[in-house]
Length: 317
Image (cartoon, rainbow, N blue to C red):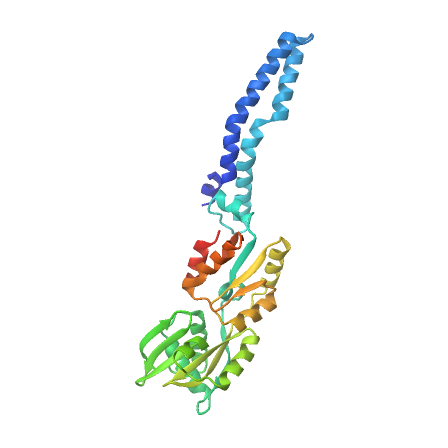
C-alpha cells in the first residue's frame, strides 16, 4: 500500500507534469539560443561566455526541480506517515488532507475507549436491581452492540443466569425488542419507549441526571410498563482531549457524530472541547450529516471505527 501510494500522482503532481512538459523544452530551447547568441555575437573568449550564460539559464530556470518536487514530497510524506502507523491510500488523499477544514469524530471507540461498563441500576417500583439486570442481559444476549456486551458482563459478574427470549429484533438507533413469557420486552432509548407508548414518568428525570454525567441511560420495559434504567458509561480515552486540542491548534473545526442521546453526547463534548454535536443519528443518516457540513463549504475528514460509520466515511472528503 505504501509503495503504491508513493507511486501515485495527486492532482498537483499531474499539473506539475503538464507544466513540465511545456516548461522543460522551452527552457532547453532558450538555453540553446543563449549559447548560440553568445558564441556567435559575444566578446572573446566566446566559448567561455557562451557556456557560462547557458549554464546560468539552466540553473536559474531549473526545469527538473518542478517535476521532482511533488513526487519527492509524496514519497517522504507517505513514508513518514507509515513509520507512525498511518497508511495513506494514494497521493490524492495526502493532498486532500492538507485542505481539510472540519474533522468529524465518532464517539464510541474513537473519542471514548469503546469499553463501556454498567455504572448504575435504577429499578422502578416493584422491581429489584437483580431482576432489572437479569432481564436487560437476557434480551441483549442477541445483540452485537458494545453496550450490550457491558450489560451481559455486568450480569455475569453478579452470577445472574440469562433467560431465553423469543422473536428478538434490533431496532436501528433505538434498541432491541423481544418476547419473554408471552409479553413484550423492550430495552433501549427514550425514542423506543415513546414509539411503544411506555410511560417513563420519574425515570426521565433520573436519566437526564445520568446523561449530564456523560453516561448512557437505557430503559427496560416489560408488558408495557417500565422496569427501570440501566446506565452505562464509556470512559473518554486519556489522549482524546489532547488530540482534539491539537486539531484546534492547526485550525480545524471538530464535530462529534453519534447515535447516543443528546445529553450524553453534549456532556462528552463539554469534557473534550468539541465544537459541534450531531446526536441520536441513525446509521443510515450519518452520510447526510457529513453532506450537510459539505453544503456549508466545509472540506470534511471522518474518523470512525464501526460498521455504522461506513456511510459517513464514504461520503467524507
